[in-house]
Image (cartoon, rainbow, N blue to C red; front, side, top):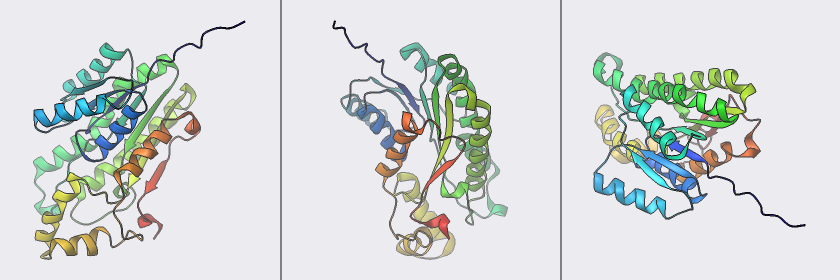
Length: 266
């Protein structure tokens, strides 16, 4: 007696802040696995569309773009709503959106503080509160928060970033405990320095703040505590996200994976 093997529907993956850097690498990895992917972020519209088309060719799933501003809850609501209207649910949520501003606390512009907290921390709360009911309904799901080594340790001149990333770690643990009996895992990835557009932008800011060269910023600040003395590759972070979204990681929840070249081992 023979029969047909039922087709498994592609997973739907939402990756915030995925028009460049780590987020793009994660979106690319999921697209290559055949997932439906919703990308999100800022940038020139022609470049975003070119990237979307490129990702769309990588696997059997469909790749869409949504331009939600991560400081605006209503637009975040529509981002998740678009995933549901397009593909029926959200199976994997990757909170990656991020920006940076470097300044002493007493010189930190309040509007920049508010913007960083909104994008780095509050946006993850908003995506999660819309996505969790969908995952509960399907009895499974994966939430992956891209934190940072700065979610575990601090550096000077990055008060908002460090505060937000520490907050993401707490949010990750709390959600994991709430969702442990629903087949939903919640974890964080904590990369060290990855050479992304966000990090590249920090280099002249820190050079100016500290009165040193950009080469010295890389060697003496960014890679000083990474024992490998090398920047982390985007592909390494993406591979970790793929693992955390897999069945093999079904018992991994409420924790973090550090990919920091030995930074937080010290």
